[in-house]
Length: 492
Image 1 (spheres, rainbow, N blue to C red):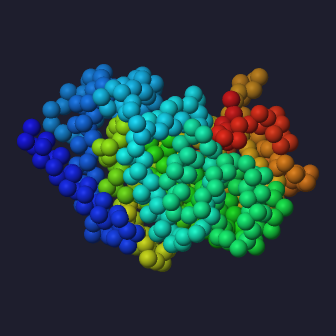
Image 2 (tube, rainbow, N blue to C red):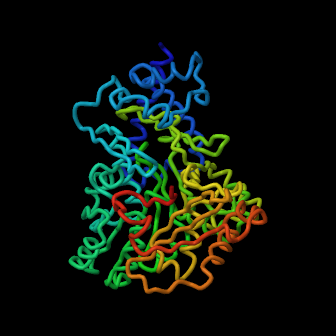
Image 3 (cartoon, helix red, strand yellow):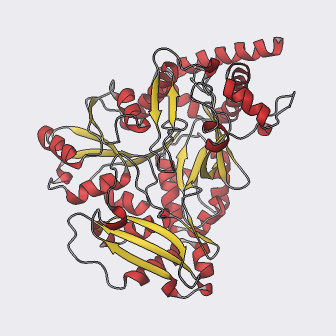
């Protein structure tokens, strides 16, 4: 009991210190210093221990979950705690059971809903305290990156119960002139027309929505001063380069409705590293185990513990005691890993690369890399083909990037029980009727270039086993799309 009290007291003191440091962007920069990172990691684990003790004592679902998973450990060992998933925890216990004391807090609560891109949407309870914490960190990140006031913030994420859009609006209303538009291209165009080029704009949205907007708008976007923050799914470097024709900066943020938004954010360092890996596939494989560069972010180990499993899937723990419901070793089914800034620096040095040449100045927060949802791939002769592969091919081609709106992947057996890979392409709304010649060869060669596993298994099948279908905008498998939900890239 005395040890438990000492842990609580220490953590509250540390929380007050963190609060003081986070009051201003200049003092917050102290947390990103290299010598502090090992200490932040240790404090993060202390915070996780406190969350565990609170959840074990006061969260009905978590105490039942520990019992159901056979957890009987008497000594604290974080790595031995059972792993939460949607299947064994979220879908098994009610929303109330997953909250502390078995009830939804009576006031200050927001209930978010996931997009349902991986199945039935789930609901997530956010307390006033955790929303305030997320809001504060979002505002600090905004000030650190953009250092501007009076900017017009155009929120084009889905609004309503969906987590990202509403949280962005609630968090950033105090730092600029906010207009919550939602994923509506006409409203975005009208807003830019009304306010004109005299303002600086920060646009938020899903990558496919933004690309579709810049392809279809009649406005001269190059006359505007705009920056872009994307989320909800990854962005290829080809698409980033394309969008940089219209936006001064293009930055991606990593989060999940299951957990919270803005767990990790792209920095000049991570963008520079990703572009280096795109041009140096051998370096990419040494650093990340694959020749296709993942999304790369930096995160604060004081707030989040991120653990890679042996199968490459990531576990997330939020070290915040003020949350309405605990998230302890939660498996999002995202695949990736983490690297400390020091280890990254040393690995690059072995390759003759000075990390300071990628970005200066730079944060020393740890690196989070994400390949995407582990279940968002299709198997094909032992290779795993992902939407990221197609994204790279489409956005690296000068014609496809302007004429293809979206795509889907499917792996299936034909009537002769032969495995086939079907690639469905959706043209843009104002399609000019022209696609490059040799479309099949273009995609087949592109997959060989960006997916090492696919390249290795090509000797096992005929090239005709890869099929290309072209569909007009919002027809066939692309009909009836809900613009509020992320694109569906894996077909039935």
